[in-house]
Length: 573
Image 1 (spheres, rainbow, N blue to C red):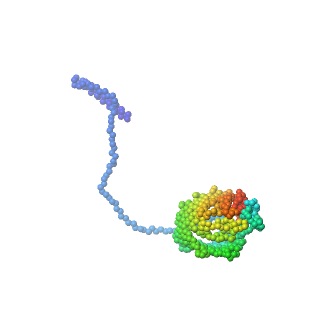
Image 2: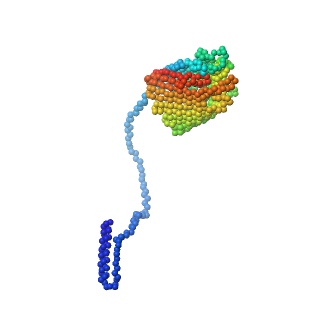
Image 3: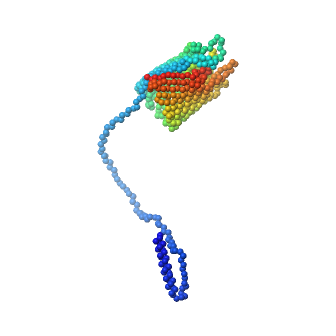
């Protein structure tokens, strides 16, 4: 740029010099030809260059001749001869994990306050290919006393025993099983109001020898056969035949024959089947021909089930016929069930069905051992039972279950004190039609921190359409149960269990024979337990029950034991 300026300056200087010479020469000419003129230049010469635009296209050659290539070729297959020589491969060997050794037997012995011994003995065969057999014996009793509302000590013992033997034979396509058991439970009628008015010559019992006792005995034998195959070509079946003889201290007897069978066939993802049931009862009360009655029930329940990856659906009909009635009574119920698996995490489900319940002395004695044997047997008809629920896993360690149930029940039985007895310390059933709503919730936390497990569940009950001045006697509106277990190490584990049963009502009468609704206080039962292992087959255990020492009345006037403990040992052999 500097060079250009220097050139420009030089040109201007030369031009000025030539111009000066030219002017000088003109002055030498004759005067009068041209006038003198002076030019003064104040700025330097500034040349201006125009913009030059470059062409933006490239030259192309337009060819007007089109050439379409065409190829012709032939493939002649030729077999390439090869040889294959397999090399022997050594077979892989798998060594499975060693099975944990099993013990044949278990002995559990314990002793607690209220003079309550505990004994359990189990004996089973270990792993066998073709059969399995075993037997066990259980005994638990108590001979202590409790204080009634008048602060009087009365005998409140019990005596429960169970003996059972079983065996199974495994065949290629079926399994044959059988078992026989004997159960004997003894109850004492100690639950009476100490202020009850009795004849002057009647002595209210307090000691064991004075107390009225009832013993319920049950001898039962079963034989069952079921198929093992899952092939669509064969019929699946499951059957059970049982005979039961029930008798009591007061000479009540019952002969019962019970047959059940399930026949079904799988066709692709559908199962077609039929449930069959037959029950015959011959009941007799205290060797009386008057109170001797027979009952026969027949169940026919066809069904269809569909299975898929996410759905399970059941459609069927349940029918029960009371053949001993004149005329024969038939009960027909729908059997509709479905559940849907959502991402293997949440399973909503619903069902609609019904059934009948036979309220025999044998059945009721397992619920309330203080019943009166002179009991009017009646059928309870669960006409409509509707369930809607949701269950699933929040995580691998958290399980939950929610359920809502609606039941329309005809002739539902409620326990009330029998006012025809001297001490009114026995119970009978009164029947009424009800509608019951039940809510259920459960949550289980398993292996938290690999040590702690918690299970919490509870029910809420609401009864409606009960007769005037009647309540769901002895039935709570709420019950809750909490179970916990903490594994401290390989030797020690312990836990806490708690039960809550809401307030209930018992039916009584005043002097004018007006109904009195006696409120039974809620039950809060908190228990602790612990186990310590001295060796893999030898343990000690301690149970502390009702640690708050609360006075609990499960049945009216029947107070259960206060604080009680059980200390014992378990030995595997």
